[in-house]
Image 1 (cartoon, rainbow, N blue to C red):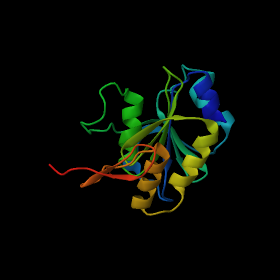
Image 2: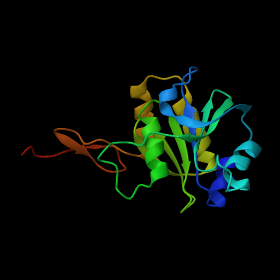
Image 3: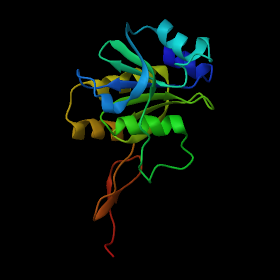
Length: 178
């Protein structure tokens, strides 16, 4: 609910969810240690209530059911394939996801909710499909299966070497090899 409210008010936010029980501090730096219970009120207070709050511009890092830190600096992705129109907050989310975390981003400009996972950014979530997506990403499953789950959610289908799939149908269509 906190994420939806932040999106409705176009309040920029980035929340990093660690997938393992042991926090990998290479994902974030700086910030203030909190070790607090996750509540929508606390998230709302960090990101919205007072935008002069020094924690507002950094990331919140969550491990398990605890907010570990807030106001954290994240590593930016160095992937040259990331669109140049992707803003800093989203590049930071992708950077954290390249190190094994899942990151939620709310765009201050558009209010769009995005999820970064395994170096990829997926946009356009709503409260109803965000919860399901996060449960899928945060459950213990091998990375290959998790990535396949992400592809299914994105309705993305890879091309085949000797054929291609028809968009939306999932059926194979034979193509000539050149």
